[in-house]
View (cartoon, rainbow, N blue to C red):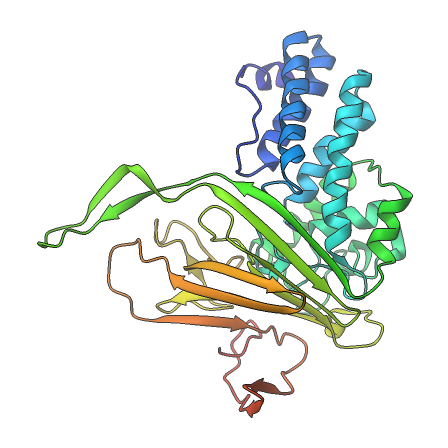
Length: 390
């Protein structure tokens, strides 16, 4: 163990939170803080302290992490600081970590919808399992902290999963079970007020806050008016850094959330997200559902294999349907106006451009669709993943 920790601490770089995937520097933070204590490396311990102070500086000017309200990644960041708060021998480190942990708890608690047991949106980074509202790491963490107050818990839905349940990593059950063990290793420190915010909301309930993100490392392509091949300009990024306002409106029946901009290039962002109950007291995945949107191109769509057009074929997966549009949203209470435009930075000809509204019908069909106050036909083809065409 000591040799592994010593190897991990060879890096002397600052632990910084610059608007990207916060779970990575958070894991570096726990290694530096606790690992430094383990092997007596005072420089590493100080790196850990400095890293936590930088994250608190970010949280002093923003309400949420850059990797905000993520059912997958907020629990990883939470676990890092829960471990420091629980196991560090340094009172200063424990105090800093506890402040960070409870700020993350506030994000989770404010967006958790008790009837559906779903983390309402918007989500900075979400996979298919999150977008359809099935069990993932946020429910694993909540179960360890609050037990059977959650009906959607790993005891019921992971050992083993239920029929037709969406499993992350293209159906990799052992991976998900190992993730449950990983998240369950933490000792978390929610306060009674956080527990009340999680489970005892007064409706309608509204939460709105700010976050910030860095620039996505995708270079601009320049098309010349006189023809010729487009040129890649590495000095200019296609997606600049910026800030985002997230809003979520909840009732007992549903929650609707939106983000004014996507996180980085937006591939994993649920910028518009609805979760709702289909029974008065949900107790199974049949009793809940979601609605989410993607701008899709060519033949990509919900339930179909997706590959990143920047590196086609390198990874083909159904665990993610990447966002192919630039998204902007405005929300007031339960009304959201969302605008989409194709990213169009990739070279080639499109075979299709469309806004896709994904309504999972894994367990129940769509009963009725209204558009402009009029009923629409719902006899759309059902694909293998349980989605109807959109």
